[in-house]
Length: 304
Image (tube, rainbow, N blue to C red; front, side):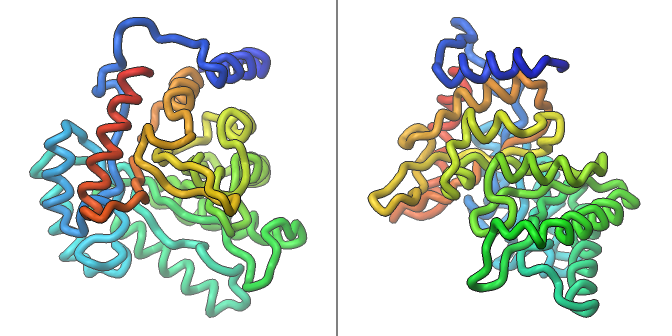
């Protein structure tokens, strides 16, 4: 979908003010590629997939399975997970990796470990039938400054190379904005995308993480990102606490306007996948917490 900057700003302002209405007809669930980060339900892929099937969801984001990060599992266990997902008609929307979630490699040995991790992640992606990887954009060393612009060129160089390596095997990579990294917010994501232009390189937009880093994620942060380069979206909810940070909440019980965010993404032509990444915890367990939050998110979708 092509829009002028003016039309997008106008739409975002109207949506943020909640004056845009879809009308009386609710958005059918089939029109949105919604899933859940599976280990927010259970580390057992079969249990997680049964949960998704119960809610008529056909996508799952894979991070931990069988008690380990997916890239630490033997291939046979990843194939076991794929079999469980396939049996329940669940597609993997994105494979989470810890690529570049650390300091900029100080030497060739450290960098080789990152490239080995990328290769392992792509192997897991091929087994799971998913060609999209979640990655990061490095973190400063202890005591370092996330706004140290002197290191940005090196991060861009390595991210370009990572995207190029992934592209040779048909993969796309999406940087998640994360508090404490060099890309925390929508503004940071926009800066990154201006510098790294590989066609298979985009972002995993997490508005709640942006809020945790002090940004007003919608419409302020989101409006700065080229929507055509958003490959995946994390959804949940938050509220500000007395210390000035944020606490995770069930969707619909916090401050974030998920309705407006999803409306804007759809208006901007977003055709990618969404994951509920619950994070909120209940004494009754993470599966219960995810069910509560998912029910809230489904109510949101009905309003979109």
